[in-house]
Length: 168
Image (cartoon, rainbow, N blue to C red; front, side, top):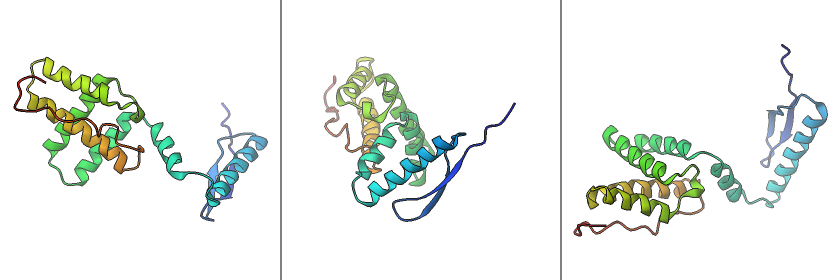
């Protein structure tokens, strides 16, 4: 079995730094096209013609939600939270996202999350318990925005249930 040799190229990024990357192309013409594309993109960024924030949101939007949750877990640990708090928070986030069928951050929707939280109450759990799940997923959504993974906090409009009431 023959191992394909890929061309490596060098180009200057938008900050004028030389970068060396594999093109993952075995053909010279294809590798040259990759080099041209990278230089063109770097030039557009250098001239301020590319919205780098939108570009970052697009890149982050391609990542699966479980990757974001794993990063969120790392943040909770790094902030010095107890192991119990980290595990409970992440488990609640994973439960809500899973029940809502969320696979990517852009799918976060107040109505989907609200349905899951209502379902928690409908299964006989307390309003306080439902609110703890809501708090966890809202914290996660807010973190996505603060960490510049999404342009906005999709769940900012959701409010906790009144814990003095029996039903949600």
